[in-house]
Length: 115
Length: 113
Image (cartoon, rainbow over all chains, first blue to last red; front, side, top):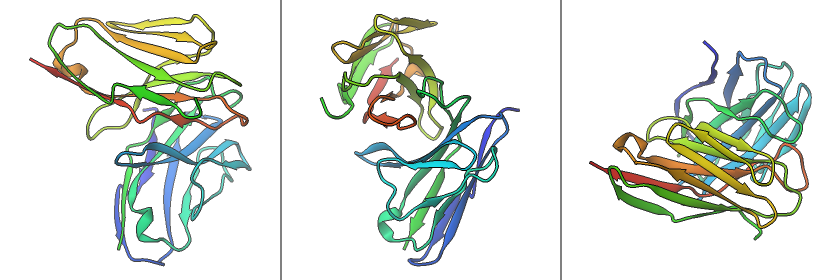
């Protein structure tokens, strides 16, 4: 089944404890992206990747890192999480990069709480 | 317009009503305009990606139009059903960087039986 998977789906952690949220797609998509969703603020892009080893900042990259060593995986790393990173996170992928004219497929979401 | 704006923020209609919402986006450096449907407790799902001025796309009872010169897109739902209840998001793939996608805050549609 073609899909985007994220793990974990739910995570409660403490301030400062490094964590990684994994994202994997099995559709051979070039483009991958991370978003966070907060009430009243909509979906905001954190980082995106146009292809392997090509990543760039979205609108809210502070406090996050990403890497794209393989085409299928795009992990999101929080080196020192803080309570303001409590949010619902979505990973998404699309077939081609270019001018972003392909629909995005979203993962199931990861609900992160930082205390 | 500097940001992607959607109106109205929320909408309540009766089953069978037709409805429409608006997405406004910066009209310079346009690449593509996306529409997504997001049901509660699920993930956003793509409805349309539109790239050309004057584009009209249709999927069942849902259709969308695009005006890139004035920077707006309309989403229409004909004969709304309770299962159409969801948040409808638009996203602008324009700007100065390929790859950036800016979402509006969404229109929450509730269809009452």
